[in-house]
Length: 109
Length: 243
Image (tube, rainbow over all chains, first blue to last red; front, side):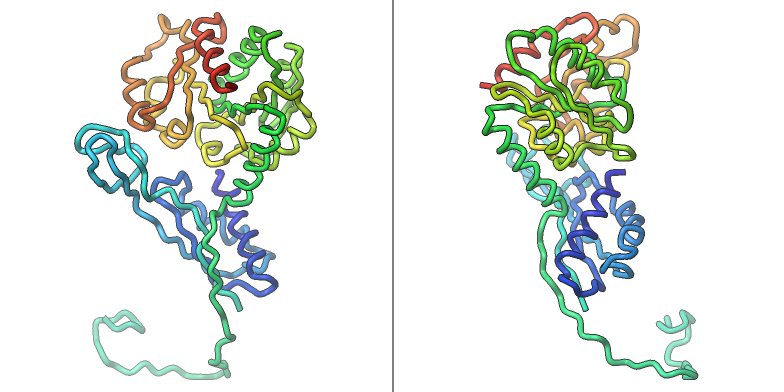
């Protein structure tokens, strides 16, 4: 449900950065380890955008794969979700990617 | 496959009658690079709160956990047992009522209740407003009891020094596996209601195993808010966070 707050923030910041123009497309990044469900954001986006400079805009969500370094054996590994360990048995990981929640770019007109 | 109609025949004509005019020159659009955290405003406000607290030599602890895990009971006992040893003030977050604030007020400590309405978590802006209203005495603690929820509060920095998760043995041992983001986001887990261990099915080793998988470095303290068992270790942990 916090996705509603996150989506409002996307729309607010996009409208502000558009500086009076209208927004045609919004591009965001959501990491696979970020506790934000892309489908929920898509669902809320149109509702939140209604009546703002972002109304009618297309939302593009780029999902970023999780990537980590194992602190026990130094191996580099891909992570599909938050409850994953290294093949060596350790769960002590340094997360290098996958925690993104970023507004990347806008197309305005 | 034909891109126009989806049929399997390539290269056939698609007659498109134009009964209306439609201009084909597109309005010029431009791309604006942003590359900023979507929660940047909350994070900036949280940093502001952190500075505000530091300038008063205050440490804030963000207490999270399920509804009914015993957050308020642990807090009540903490406030009573640390009475005379350290200043402490409280911000209570719930969707509705000021029942928790009334319980804290009964301990004699200052408290401000935030009612989030439909909101499922506290954010840094709400906490800023509450801090200014609370106006806590310098040198001490501010406990922020978040909305009971094992999902949403994980994402929102309030300006706290640490997040403390109050879990309870009645919730079952698999909660860290089911709610990994929240258990991964905290520095301390208070495992509450250990006085009920003889009466409930709760595998301690399994709980710790699930917990270590999502947060290998977290500190775990087994306590009972009802009987006071284990609380001294929690108070030592609080003292260490202040110094």
